[in-house]
Length: 356
Image 1 (cartoon, rainbow, N blue to C red):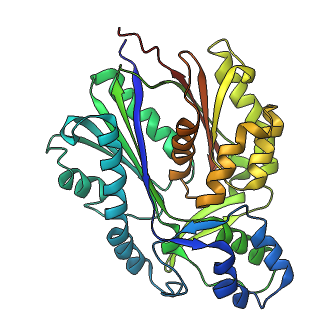
Image 2: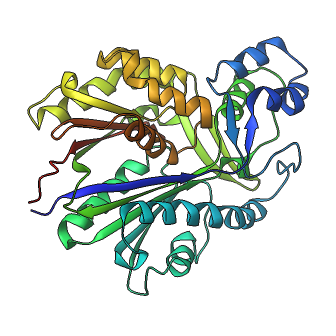
């Protein structure tokens, strides 16, 4: 059977914003310089973020959803083009070699969308197949990878996935009082940022092979994380209870996936965990018994980029691969979480460099 292997990853981000400057120059006044709000802000684990729209220069909080979607396309096109072009180049192929182009985003929509425009501009050809994955949230990269891998294995052709997320398009007017809603919105405003990340998968060759995928949704807790389309952009609800729910099912889901392949957490050489926030990473390390070192790269990405929704786990994997070359047969686990509440996991294996 043809294997689907990750040949290259690349990401592009907008201009950086220092997290402390962001607080001092904008959000502190929104929360009346409340010391409690400042502590919540600084507990996000973020040192800098990248935002296509800086509210200190352009306040979009009163914009309609239509205005935000129009601006999304303006900002997303160059970011997505740079990320996909980087991954295609890194894979050593031409854009015209791609048989499938998948685009995931929960922050911007339009038709013709990014998939159509980028396929044309990058020279993928008129016959390239396209998939648009919309509004899945932070875990979308993993089912996107699964779909791309299935295509590569069944068709024997290369595929690309782009995750392009611009949460800055959906800045809401801050809730200045530290009510439950105010705390939720402050947590959202302290975490989320913009990025475009792309990955190319090829048939056989060298790289991390996509082995298997697992998903679990606890619909009884769906109200704890929401992403609703309103007349003034998309509005997130984010309960502080999310890590506690994740703590209940992350271990059983991962164990079941690994058991299908006769292995355990102890055999995983690298972890690419979506850094939804510091407590999420605490829970994953604790419940899986993998130690703080296993999520260190995830914390680095959170520190340097914030939570970039679906693009983030690919950025973690990209940094992990840059820091640590994996030996043939070593396993890597991807984990991401989002509305549902939903967990997705993917198992990867480093290929043998010996020609087949």
